[in-house]
Each structure stands twice: as C-alpha cells, then as structure tokens.
Image: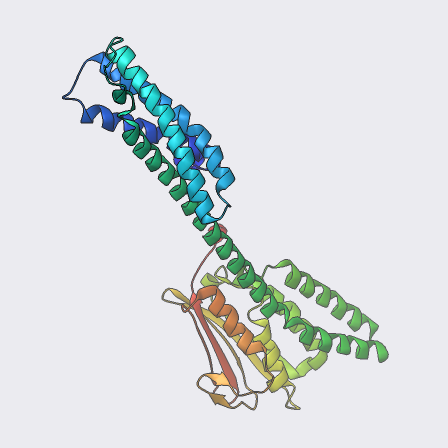
Length: 359
C-alpha cells in the first residue's frame, strides 16, 4: 500500500487532510490575490490568522452536519444554512479584529458598518466549505453503495458458480454407491473397499477445491484418474481411456472439475449404451494463446444442433457453459460435434493461463 492509499484509508484522516489542505489553499489564493495590495509580512501574518480561525471555526460544523445528515432534505438545508451563517458571523468578527487591531494597529473606523463589511464574504467562504463537505460525503456514500452492490453481485456470482458445480456431484455419487452396494452383496469386499477409498479421495478433492478458483490441468487429470478408476470397477474391460495431454499444458489453469461432467456424459450415453463398451479419449494442447481440451467417445452418437446436444433434462453441459461464461465472459468456446467414425466430441477453448508457481 503506497503513501496516498495509507493517507486516505480512514474517513477521519481523509477529513483532516482535506480540511487542512482546503484552508491552506484558501490562504494562498487570498494572499496572491492581494499581493499587489500589500507585500509586508504583517499582511501575511493577518492572512495566516484568518486562515487559522476559519480552520478552527469550521470544525464544529462537521459535527453539526453529521447530526443533520439523515434529516429531511429541507430541514437539513435549513439547519446547515443557519449553522453556516453563525460560523460566518463569528469568523467575520475575528477577521475584523485581526484586520483593525493588528494590520491597522488599533485604528477604529468612524462607522460601525465597517466591522460587518466582510460578513457576506465570510458567509460565501463558509458556504463553499459546507458545499465541499456535503459533496465529498455524498460522493463517498455513492462509492460505498457501489462497493456494496459490487460485493453483493460478486457473492451472488460465486454462489451461482458453486451451485452449478455441486449440482453435478449427486449423480455420480448415486451411481457409485449403487455399484459399491452391488459389490458388497456379491462378496467382492476387497474391490468395494478400494472403490470406497477412491471415492473418498475424489470427494475430498471435489470439496477442497473452490469452484471460483482455477487449478492446474495436472490436478484435474489426477482427479479424473480417481473418477475413472471408480467407473472401471463398474464397467471393467468395457471402458477404455486414452490420454493425449501435451506436457506444456499440464500447468495451465482450468476451472476445477470442469471435465468430470463430460466424462460422466460419455460413460452414460456411450459406454453404458453398448454391450461391448467403448473408448473415451481426453486430449489437451496449446493453440496460440488458448488452451484446447477435447473429450471424445466412440459411442452411438447423439442428436446435435448448433453445437449443442439435443437431450431433455440434461444439466451437465449447460452447467459447464454457464461456468465458463461466468469465469471467462465471452473469451471461450464450448462446442459439441460428431466424432469420426462415431460418437460425440466436446471441445473447450479457454485462455492459456499459468499460475505464478507454474511459470
């Protein structure tokens, strides 16, 4: 945090800095505005006294304005004008004393009106001070409201992202628990124990990783290994996985658990639909300034229109698109196409980013 940020980090400090700087600025303008009138040091001393008395007199106004801030507008304006006028009269009297007693060396004018000749000027200056006070206070209030609105929007955005990701977990959990139950019933306790262990590790990863933050692709691959190891227990030799991960992409940042729903869809609609099973291929490569990730299967295929699947009641792919939209705005692409010779291919393009530890 630099000097100016520290200087203005508290409201109290902001007031004293602005209050003092404003009165010093008034003194400089007043002095140079009357420079040709008198260049003697006594005139500078009088101006300094006037600035100091004005600085003192306007301090109580701050506390008066604080109390009237939440009143009805007309009441607030009325009280502020009255307080400013009282402060202006007191300041005008003190300015007269400084002028006649110090600058004029005790000279007394014949007409008393000269003692009040600068009330209008004093009232104008006090009104300017009051206007700046209310203006700065109102500006700070608007900024605070903007920050609160931004914070609320951010919290809602984060909650939405968490909902999108955690909405997918029950589907996988339901299928896995059914498989474990089946293994226990047929006496495959060793296999069931291994499956429970992998499930525990996968769920721990799922819960530990914040869906708002991005993680290296290598961590996602490790999580997918756990997930696929669980699914291989269910499908045995019917499930084949092919990896093609470019080494330079392993540290690229991706949204946590962004690929798991794609693998889940491929297993549900490609592997589970055919008796002989099938293969899922997962690849990643750097394409210019982007990271390209593809998940493909060789299943029976699907109805695809405008780059999206035509399936009822599916939440996986729409959720992925919404997460990518929330995290990358429009700087991404998410398309579904036909795989050759059969099956479905899902392609994700996001900006190629690497965290500081991975650089």
